[in-house]
Length: 59
Image: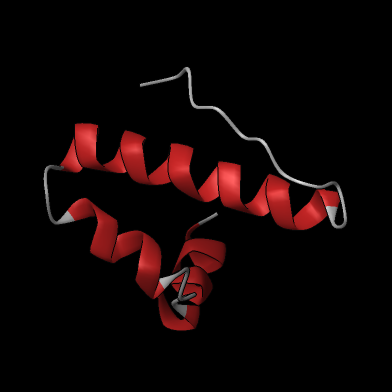
C-alpha cells in the first residue's frame, strides 16, 4: 500500500505532491472510515462558523 511508484517528469513538483497526498489521505480515510471515507475527502473541508463561535464563547 505504501510502496507506490511515481515515475513522472518533474514539471510541477507541487502537482505531484498533491497527487501523492490525496492518494495517501484516501487510503487512510478508507482504512479508518470504511468505503464511504473517500467521499469525505472529495467534499473537502467545510468550516462550520456557528460551531466555531460557540467553541470560542465556551473558552
